Length: 69
Image: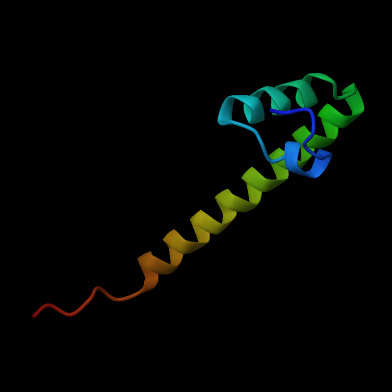
């Protein structure tokens, strides 16, 4: 990366590895309160996803089978 590039140009010059490292650095720099908030959001997301899947299954169980032929 050349030093004459503007900041806007440099921020797009990344690789998958750079992105992974940045995400890891951000996660490791989070405070305990931020980590707890993230965990609470993840649990709520998983709960809603599970309820959605269960509702889909119950709808499928109640619907008549498709007609053959």
